[in-house]
Image 1 (cartoon, helix red, strand yellow):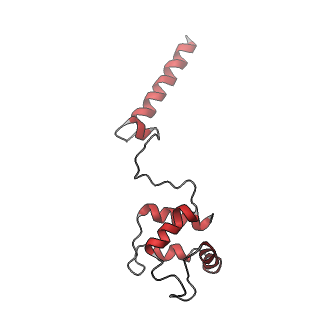
Image 2 (cartoon, one colour):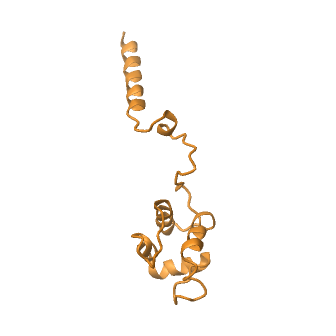
Image 3 (cartoon, one colour):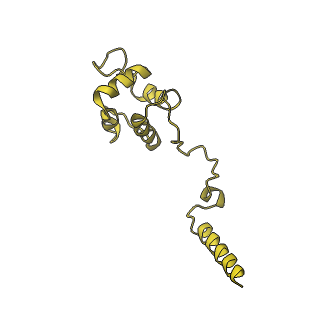
Length: 120
């Protein structure tokens, strides 16, 4: 009797978890989403994630000393900037009001996470 009550309780709990999902389908709810629009922020590296963001949004002004003291054209240059300025790089772009640069939310998340743990 006790075993069947426990089994019933577990079943009810599982059903409640599944039904409480706000996604339209079970795959989204359970994390099996294959949608390419998902922002992958587990492991952020300079070469795979940050360099493309900087190349597409920052390099036209922040390369070859065009803006003195703020080269963003290589890993070493960005690390040197972060060592002197801390999180100021993120602070400049987080509100999408730095010289017309507008980063999408995924790029902002990646940049923020990487600044605190810069991996080449």
